[in-house]
Image 1: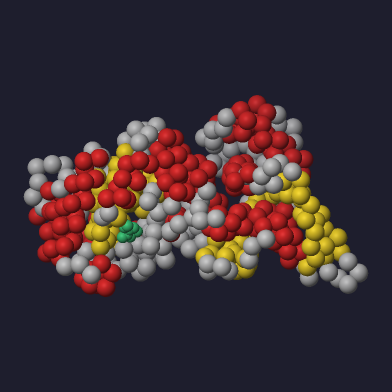
Image 2: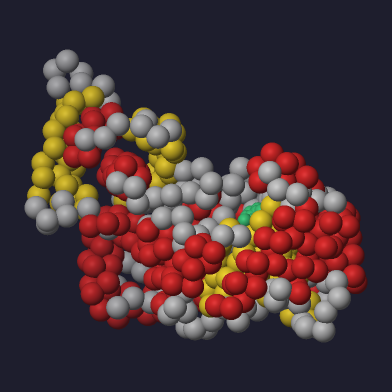
Length: 512
Ligand code: KIV
Ligand code: ZN
């Protein structure tokens, strides 16, 4: 059986999701988790886009021990140079060069003829090859490019030295049959004596991204591109966890092996959900909370007799531990550390001290600390400490005129305590008004939602907010986790404000 490589672009294409902006610390944590998940390559960002993107690619390059790291570059020498500089410390660096090739992009975006496009490919793929052993080339909007011209484009990129050819369905336009045929046609007709790997890169505008990706694999693709939980521009990208599980469950049909460690799937998906501020829909395939619950009596009866009657994926396959022992008030540091090991979560001594203190605090309030609580605690801690701001505490009082006064205690970057007071018609409004005084920037709250990490009255709360930076119209998602729902709301709103502040300071940039 042949092996299909996996490239994750959650940190580049995934970050193009409206509202999603990972901090560098979060990006490195996700990259490390992806490495545990068995990913072959990580597209860590677009180094030329901003100093922040450059620094993130650099940090991920340093952190990866066995995974290839790639950076995105337009067909512009300065972009390729930025990739080269950012990836100097990578053990397995790669460069991903792209240019649009479809008639609509040629005419309206690039104002270039077919010959000019071919020339740009020749020049920039060979320039990238002078700096990198491994170069990937993407004809953007490939699926709306004339097939005969696409063949010329790919042949040119291969002749210039590309060893990975990515075929982006940039606008989510293709269908499984059509897309599969493009792979078959290119693989049969591109002339080369080198080993070239072709990869699908599918957007989900028509809801076919995973089906299109699987069709490309069936037709010879040797690497897949996608994101965790399918995050990405507009309707998102192909969800890699769905592709990985489909290849496993239907190995009989696809006849390929993947390097993915499936029992790390839930850990990976939950981390990306928390850091992106995008909750996982309950009915989502493979990782949704309902994926393994059976409501109808007939199904329950069948599953009790033999789970395979209605369950093709077992919870254990993707890392849902059904018989794992919960921790409690009496659990000590040893049990806590063992639990982290069981969940494959690694921390250094300093991080462990902070986490254990948080665990003890939670255990004082909550009877049973489940695996979901521990993962939330870990994710919440990382998010909350982004960029050195700390939420410290919160106090509320009701006034005679039925308004609420909030006192939010923050720790600023100089480690000083700052008390902020504000009134509001309700608790959340008062808290957010107080936080607004700390940041002194114009934001508008777009959405606010509360969920529980586990079942039961003593569950930890997770609050998701999305806010708009009124000065730039950019949306930012963020989340906060705490035993107290109002504290979780405060943390979420602070995290969103930190991103707005970074944008105002010019530290964030998007692919234009
Ligand atoms: O969807 C797309 O076309 C892309 C390219 C930059 C590869 O993300
Ligand atoms: Zn894309």
